[in-house]
Image 1 (cartoon, rainbow, N blue to C red):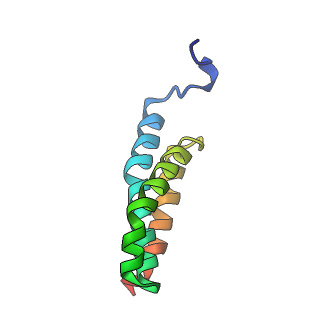
Image 2 (image 1 turned 120 degrees about the horizontal axis):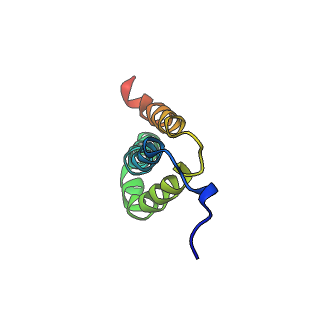
Length: 91
């Protein structure tokens, strides 16, 4: 049974922004989150658990990107949080 047309994204630009935000922005946010934890906790422990948690967080962020109406808003949130998590390394 095909999907209801009113729930599908009509704009190609918005679809592209959501897909790239989920792929690239979600990966960037996942990596900077683990770097943030490595700054405050034992690096070996965080690095070991990163093998499991990184995929779970990235996949969740990929799905969350499609819950927003605007792809630029997703990019803004993901980049803003990535900058926030990377801030201890910048200072």
